[in-house]
Length: 112
Image 1 (cartoon, rainbow, N blue to C red):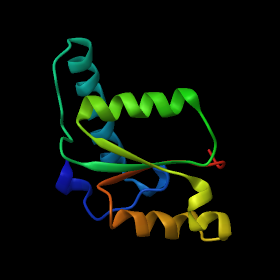
Image 2: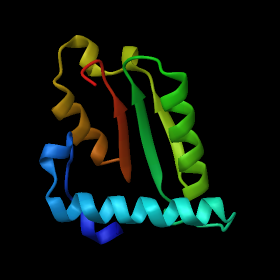
Image 3: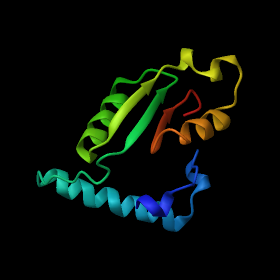
Image 4: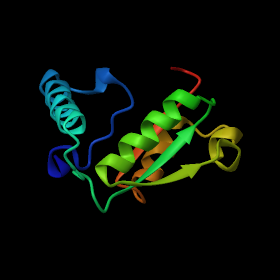
């Protein structure tokens, strides 16, 4: 999976092909089976992901944090008030800049 999505930016499902969505869905089902069976599956071990929450969500943040831990991902939380987005930088530009420093980005915006 690491090479399959390397260098690609996805801001919405519409940015993905049907095959990519099917791949991610199948992989998620595989992870769910392993999680249910209590089988370790640190598929993303060694990766560092950034998490940016424009709006607070206890459920979304905790679900993401738990999933990241199960996959072996270290999470760095970014505060919106410390980002250029609060000064008018488009989300797309922010995502591209952060892509240089992190293996993945998880962003929850007011738009979703």
